[in-house]
Length: 358
Image (cartoon, rainbow, N blue to C red):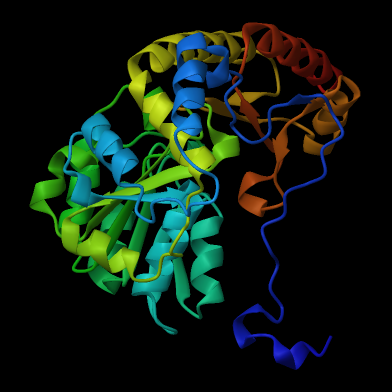
């Protein structure tokens, strides 16, 4: 292919790569171990809804019934919700709606790669503020940079992926207040944090967009259901660049069934995940050579003496985890917290491998 056919911004572009997985225990993508269709009432609800939805009709382009259910779940108005094909689509819509070539996107590092990737594809400049030691966000530095640069879009993942750190609501609000332009708060993992959402402040800020998802706590990653929450004018603007029929009938009906039993699902999924997370952190915190970082999510970041060796040891035990090439995450592994059985196996393998380097 003639490379000149490509957009200038992607001619030397390195895409976000999902590695080939050969292991059977897959804990590299922060997926839930719980299948909502194992709940008899949820499965029955989904199948009943599906039976009433003809396959020959296009789906509702704005998923109005689901929009209303999600609005009730987070405590806002339906017109303040935009349903999407995963949280990734909301990120893409935000960038395509607000960023021009040469505009600035501000975030910190390390964080979720897709923010910067989507911005760079559009020819925007990505400015980052490095985390402090221990992967704590540089709160003062980030606030100062917002005031100094006044970027077109500022993005904060809270709790953060891949570090797991949760920033308090008052700080998040101060960041929104400091910005003249769009501030995006990605709350994909908030259900695991037990903390209030910035959505509670939505009526006060016309520059705030919140990203949420059903992929993590609800275990619907395969259905790709995300949503954005903002004041109506911003939601209408995001709708300008949305694909017309962006969420299929299977995903809409699965999400509606999940919302019908949201309390039951979360009561089933969250407590054992938090208990397994605590066990994992307690079991590894005193292992020589390992640094376990605090987490408010369904994953834990661990720095090990030799990243490739630890990845191989886990691979040999049929376990796939997330490793990183970035210099600021050297020798770090992100471990998804799933069932107690899996977590105990991971702890045993990591402890044994760490002893070899002690």
